[in-house]
Length: 85
Image (tube, helix red, strand yellow):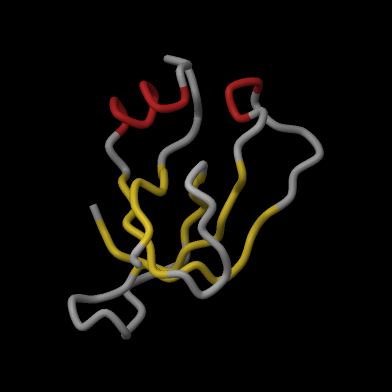
């Protein structure tokens, strides 16, 4: 799990069938200080309603992401699992 800041969203006209109905966010992972960028931005699926500039918790755990999406062959790696209040 990592914390990150939502910096935008992505739109796709063609998606893997497992991604239908999922919102795609561009998330910049953050270092422990909660402000400094940590690597390149990632694309994460979101059903929690996070928006631009929200601080989120993202996970790259493949098994839990597949269970969340409900498809064992999904290509999704990152998922938003929490939004900071």
